[in-house]
Length: 136
Image (cartoon, rainbow, N blue to C red; front, side, top):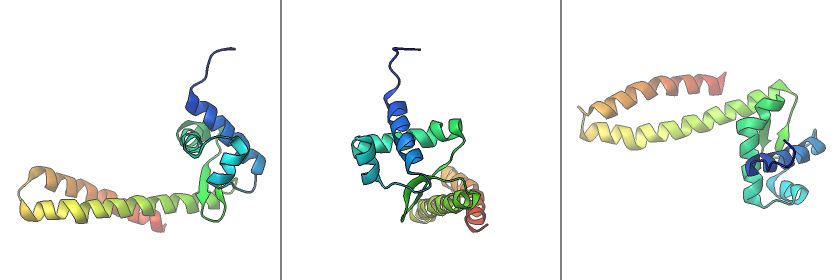
């Protein structure tokens, strides 16, 4: 609809997407996206968030991040897989810390606690799955 204000996050996402498409095949770090879009770092972050939540699926272009390249759109499935495995390793690390740092001590102090036992039982399977995905 002409004249209708678009949601702010979508606007930021469009600006970030345009900058990344222009930079292809190279990527852009946050500071470069700030310069290219004239958005603040927090607005760039909202734009990237929007792209991850909505925009990438709409355009069928995964957005990835690498330390040396920054944010980028890649057409290479190997790049997607590398990024996905890294994300699974990060999630696995966080989940492991929840189990070892919170749930295990909880269960040690209250071994019959139904909630803690249920959580550990459920998360053990998730942990094994993430471990396999991170290695695959």
